[in-house]
Image (tube, rainbow, N blue to C red):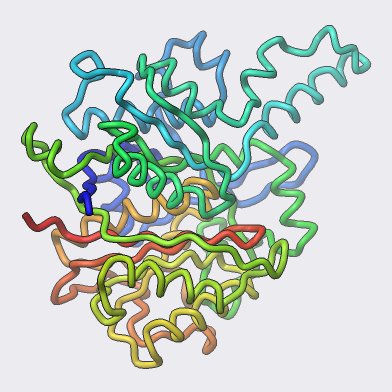
Length: 409
C-alpha cells in the first residue's frame, strides 16, 4: 500500500499561531480561554485566535471573504512554508485542498440579518457577497483563489469529526493518485455565530465557570459543558516516494484510519460504535491495541460524552491499558471542525521528544473517567511514543479515528 506522510503543517489556535508556540503552552499547562459576548447573549467563555490575516491576504480580500476562509488561507500558506513548497514551482492542477468544517455560512447569514434589521429588513441592503461566502465549499475555495491552486477542492462537513476526516480524505486522494500534493485538515469560525452558543445553552451543554480558563474541564466531576473555540490546522500530505525524491523533512506517517456512524441519536454518542471505529483503525494500521502509545481523546467536557469515550477506550484497550491518554480541549475548548487536526498537531512532537502533554483542570477526577495512564496536571516523560491514535466524534453520530506513526525509513 502507498505510504502517505505529513511534510508540513500550519495552524492558528488560541494558544498561538505556530506549532512551537502551541506546543510550548500545552507543555507549560497554560490555557487561553477568554470572555466573549455573542450577539443577543451574555458573556460566554470562548477560545479566540489572534493571527495576522493580512500576512497572506489584502485587507479588501479579508473583508470580502469569510473568517473561516482567512483561517484556512493562513493555515494552508503556513503549511506550504513548513513543507518547503511554493505553488509557483509546482503543477497547480495536481494540488488538492480538503478542508473539514463543522458548519459554514451561519456567521455570514446571521450578520446579514442583523444588518438589514437596521433598515426595516429591506433586502436591497443585503450584501452581494453573501452567496459565495456561504456555499459549502467556501473555505477550501478561498484557499485555491488565494494560492492559485487549480486542482480539486472541497469542504468536508463531518461535524466535530471533520478535522480528522479532512486529513483522511487527503490521504485517500493521494493513494488514488488524484493529486500529488494534498492540503488537508479542519477549520472553525464557530465563535462568531451566536446560534451555536444559544444551541448548546438550550441543551444545557454550554460550559460555565467564574474563571474562563477553568471552564473546559474534561473528565472532572465538575465539568458542565463545552467551551466553543475557533481555529484551524491544515497539513501538507504527500506520497512517501515523492517526499523522498524532493528531500522533504517528514513530520509523521499516516498509519491508519477508520470512519463510521452511530445511527442511534442526533447528539448523544454511542460508546460501542466509538470502540468499533478505534478497533477498525488499529486493524487497518496492522497493529494491536497495546502498540498504541498515546490516545488523544475527543472528550468535550460534557457529563454524557466523556464517560462514554472512556468506556469505549476500556473496550478497546482493556481495564489495565498501558496506553497514555490526554486531552487538548482543556486548554482552549472545542474547536469544532478544527478540533481533530489541532489536537493531533499538539501531540505530534511527542513522536520526537516522547513527552505527553497533560490534561488540565482535572481537580476531582470522575471515577467513570478514571483511566490508568490519563495524564493530568503536568507533562509525562514516556519511554517511547511511536504511535498516536487521535479520536474525533461529532453530532449525527459521525466518528473518525486517525493513527499516525513516527516515520522510519
